Image (cartoon, rainbow, N blue to C red; front, side):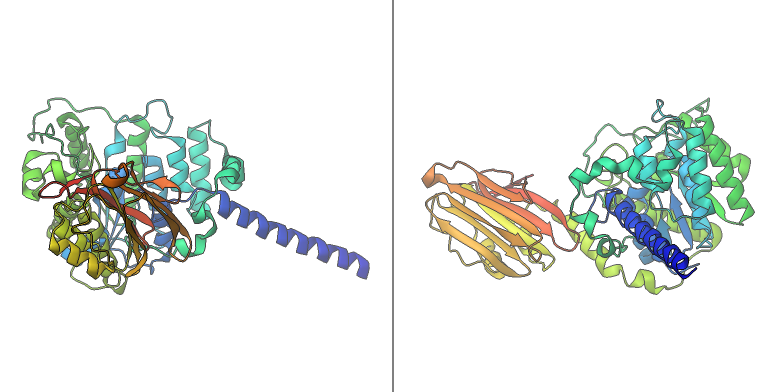
Length: 497
């Protein structure tokens, strides 16, 4: 009998160890999109679970249009309304519905704000109107509960190409990733702790589009048809919000794909269900919000940081006016203000064209700054720029050294490497505690001005232009913030990105 119990005990221990190993393997191979990604979906969903329960006044849902336009920190700073953004790339209404159900296990929001981009045809070859990979990106980091079990079953019923088993055993879906694992795959615990932006995905670029024109209210005579499945799940979202006494607000952020016919369909739905609808493509609201598509959008539909600020403030004003929301403090949003200020600085850096201002702005302990010269960099190098480089921690004179080669790297406020001369120069090393590698070359006019090169972790980021090339890496967010060349041969040192 004792021998039998020992055998059973050994089997139990073996099964426990096996389960732990399988769980760790799943955690490694499932794709990750942390705060260092353009679309930090993993951080958004993991961060939601780290919030104190019942502290979010409003929850945001929708596709990447939502992720890039709804900025919880700005909502709090401007209106003292607490919010969290649960939007992600190509989030269809099926996914939005189940994430709303999941969110209500932990939060009791006064309002839900839903961007309506995915209600209309997007990927007509897919049963869920969106790519399978984006559905998985949204669902893989939802905790297991009756909600996720229901969601996985519904998704696989609606899309026969998806495997229910792969939701329970992700290695079925991701087994080929073993050959391409990266640092993020092995630093899950550390990376998952960065939730400062509460689901928002900052975008720094300007689209510069001149052809966007907001439409007049009432332009369309006939409403555009919604995708039937998406309309069905919008009904479920509306019903759930009504049942839970939550105000549902429909929104369409600025987008070149929005038109008066879609807007009419959404307005009719809102009117039929007693909802508020904000369409930032409609001329009067567009102007009231102070939008300028050229700088407030980073492409045809995703908001730049500046567009997100404007859209979010207008939503905040509307929530205060309609429902009397806001006006209270919460430490979870107070504590992330400084991080948000840093993100704003990162975005602003990419639009600085004055070299003196730029060399002052990169003096930030969050940054590793890499410089490499090509051709000639000294002819119009200002004394004020030299002063800023000195304060950055560099020593080379440069002025009067016509045609010289020069390269340097600064990290954590200290010069890591600095070389100058009239031959081709090379340097390599690491920053961020040895976790990020760099390789640099510089060739000035005196040695044939072959090239300037700045490779970070093996990828080339240098503009390779005449003058002084900069690459800025943020050691906190683990992202390349900017790459620019200042042509210091020409008067004015024109910036090229």
